[in-house]
Image (cartoon, rainbow, N blue to C red; front, side, top):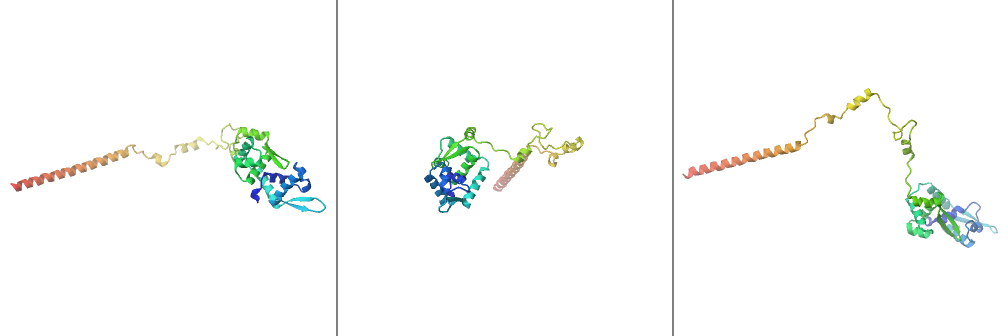
Length: 247
């Protein structure tokens, strides 16, 4: 049932205090007793609240453990950085989608996830929400409108990154914050002359491979020539022997 929690539920929960009663809840959300009872009934079905009735007194509203955890989750979400989904919701609101049904159709996420982000945006003063006759109206604030015009904000640098680039007293702009102390020239000179062992070795000619290939081809050609000469000599020798035998 927790997946069915929506922004109306969270906003209604935020209005409930220790002394809230059913009979006066409608006035707290600017709605009739009938509309307020429907909202409280939905909270009861989802296990977010419970009622304590004392006849002939009024019915007290008690937030359950699930309701308290839901509000803790919503407050925890409000402390997270502004993200892409937050900006998308602001953009949709700026385009005229003010109802939860329109927002759900445009963004296509779970009602509970959207409720957490809308509550976060309200806590960050990007939007406002007001109950009226059992309906929750959502609208951008000036801050939210300007954020939509400015676009998605750039991520803020982490404290570690900020400390790494912090300019120290007497330090020139752009100079590293933790520059190594200069050492005497005598101590630096050996390091300058040091070269890796492989750099001290004589460099091979660039065309060494081509030279080896040429030599290999020349040797092969000489070998083939010798074989051909031997074959020719054998043929001549056989021809001579055959001639003298016939004579």
